[in-house]
Length: 424
Ligand SMILES: [Zn+2]
Image (cartoon, rainbow, N blue to C red):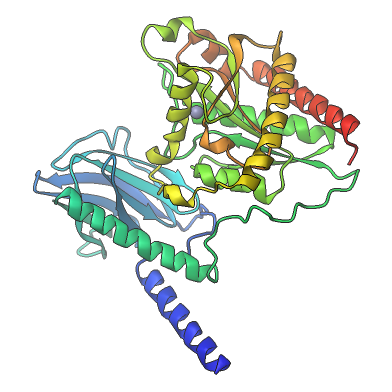
């Protein structure tokens, strides 16, 4: 009997996997790689009208793709594997029919993502790769038609359910969430501390953009690398980055990287922006820790903006019910929160005199990327992409080296204090 039911389970799993492969939604993992034989997308264009709009990408050869829709705001997400996008400058800004414009860039672990921002709920009526014919290269053709919000939401839910089923099967019935009571890696007295550096944004999500077109994702990546090198040089730390290339990593995945590695410290690196008249007057660094209640309106607005990263990158957000909330986590979180605040204060001390710091240098708000219940985490906003002096600082490699050195020193101080209090 046992063998028979096992057998049946195996067949069911195989059928679901086969379906998932046919729908191009599996495998879900695996980092994308850029290879010499990648297909190259050289151009893209929109056609049609407000009833039926067509999006076409010309490819150098056929590729695998997956397509789905997301609401609020309405978007069509196209993921392509083994593709390099070489679209002419300015592509994506044009608007036609149902499509307001489109964005593209790398997103882990799917590869290249194109997001069509649409004006109304749409149905993906057709989506296929046309083979090369009569001297014309292959092309991805997507046709969208107008629909109602209700039908749009039903289709979106159907798709999410089939993806969740495929993911569960792939993981042998596991939901993929990290159990809270995972065994902490035992650390010997001499074990190196694990530091995770999280360069904000990346790939399809540029973050804040300066007047001259400099992107937050590039500024914070350069800084993160400088910090990684400083920390590594000391030999005291194992240092990991949540992204090592210009690619978007979903916020939850960033948190998971810290947890899976049993990180001792998680440092998220960003650069802020302010609109209108504040842009010219507000400059300097700020350090944030996690809190349900925000320290002030500005911190609250900033957390909301940083949390939008996933929306910009077209990441499906987990439903409210899958958020882990229980008393155990609450207790661990209290300890983690105190450690995070301790590090934030040490960090501000170390930064003082090395760079401009805002008047209220330490603030708090509900940043999703700081939500690991068992990893002390801070988010540093290095400065403002909207302030010319801050941009000058962010661009300077001498400034980067000096400030990364100050952060590394704060890390040293934080751990030496902890070791003095609790040597194990
Ligand atoms: Zn940011």
